Length: 305
Image 1: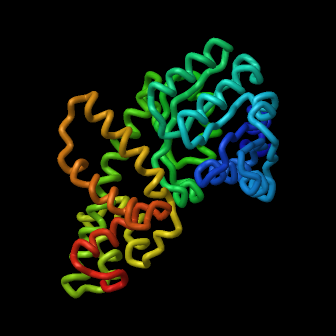
Image 2: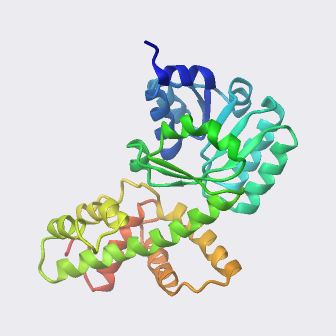
Image 3: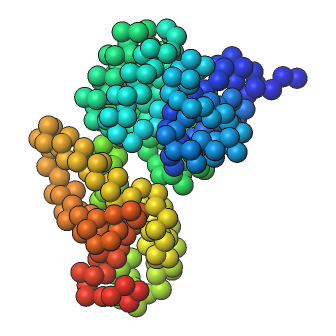
C-alpha cells in the first residue's frame, strides 16, 4: 500500500527554502520530516550546514534553488533581501513556479515583488506566519495565506507539513494585514504578561505558580503561555525574536494604524517599554526582557524579584 505523503511529495517535487534562520530552518526540518525533498540556501554557512544535517540539501545561492524547485518558500529578514531574492528568481525560475513569501515585511514591497515575478509567469503568495521560532519547531504555526486561490490550494500539502493551520484570506495582501492585527495584540499581550507576573511576585506569590495558574485561566493569553516561563526563568537571552527585529514589526504596525486612522492607546503605551528594552542591554534578547524593564521601573535591581 502506497504512502500518501510520499506520493504527494513526489507529485510536488523538491521544495525550495530561501532563508534558514529560526523560522526558515524549522520549516525546512518539518518538511524533511514529512517526506519532502528540501533544497535550501542562506547567506550563513552554519545555517546551510544545519539544513544538510537535518536531511535537506543546501546549495550555494538563490538561483540554484530557483532552477531546481517549482515550489519555493521565502523566510527573509528585510525588504532589501526580498527584492534581491525575487530579482534572482525572476531569471532562474520556470514559468508556473509558486513562491510562498512568509515574512513580516511592508506590503508595498511584497506587491512590488509580486508584480516582478508575475511578469515572468511566477506566482507569489503573501503568507505571513503567526508564531515564534519555538512554535515553528513544533509545527504550531498559523499561516495567513493570501493571493491566487488555486496556487494556495496547490501548496496546502507543503503548508500543512510545517503549520498547524492555514487560513485563505482572499486577495493578495490580506495576509499581511491580518498579521499586523495579530502582532498588535502580541505587543500588548507580551507587556501585559510581564505586568501580571510582576504584580504576582510583588504580592508575595511564587512566580512559577503564577505562570501555571494564570496560564490555565481566563486571564491567560498565548503570549502569557509562550513568554511567561521565559520571564520567570530569565531566559530571554534565548531569543525567539529579538528586540531589535521586533522594532521592524512595531514600525509596520504603527504605519498600518496611521493609514487606517485606527486609535490604539494600548499599543501606543507599549512602545516606551520596548524602547527601554532595546536601549538597556536587551537589543539581542527576546522581547520577554520587557519583564526586567518593569522590574527596574518598580525600583528593583536585576534578580530582585
